Length: 194
Image 1 (cartoon, helix red, strand yellow):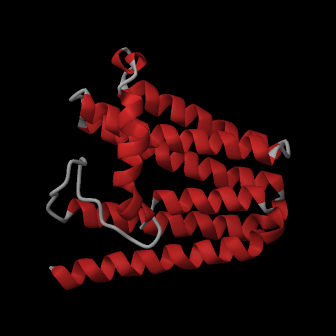
Image 2 (cartoon, helix red, strand yellow):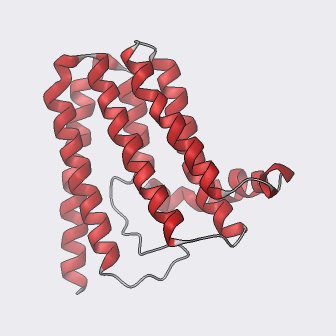
Image 3 (tube, one colour):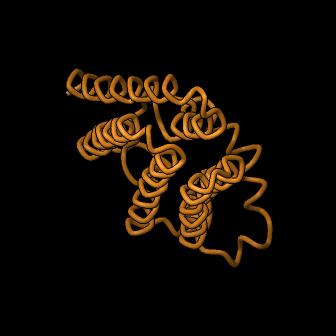
């Protein structure tokens, strides 16, 4: 939902000026995706070592790189199915590892972490399936079905879960409920429009 409203101003004020830097003439979009993946893979280790602020920084940097790679690919006219698959799979790895890190921080959170993974699985499945069966009218690789919880909202929840461990139960339950709602919302809208 945030992506729908703020993607254009964010793109215009942050990403587009950044892409004018000479450095990006020599950098491939896949390298940016890989760096985002590596940064995200540091997050669970930092959480396991009880370094939540550093975990937050690596997650934030990973999310920033995720918003940069596709824009760079489009600017350089290097978009490809392989790049899109690498990006989407990397996103799911980072999300899964972040939840693993939240569990490593405090193993008593096991059930809620498992339910968050299930919520993500349902939400991403609805996103991908609706995307496959809906005609694409955007610059993205396939139709992006908007929902209440998208990547930006997930990163906000992950950030809050990392930075405010005392609110973990409440935030995790809210995140799970919103993911399930988004799954139902996307599926309903798809059936309604077809």
